[in-house]
Length: 92
Image: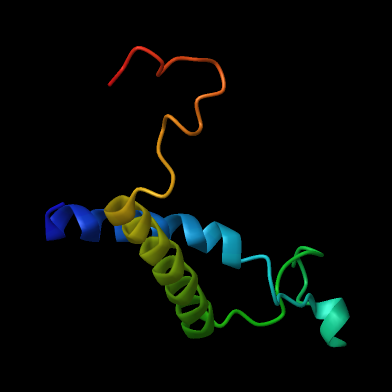
């Protein structure tokens, strides 16, 4: 695999990890014990720390990407192993 392909796959893992990480560690204004801004949604976060979220996303994405690359190199899990309906039985 070329390094550009590996980098593109890493960025895909990073983008998908954002949606996995965002819901964790969020406190609403009610949970933080502060007053809400008029017009603020009940579920809006009290503080948004982009740097902390980016660090968490980077860690998760790097671990997932590392596992993907190890699987790509060593072939631990292949499409044939996940073939539950027999679509790969004639493919060599």
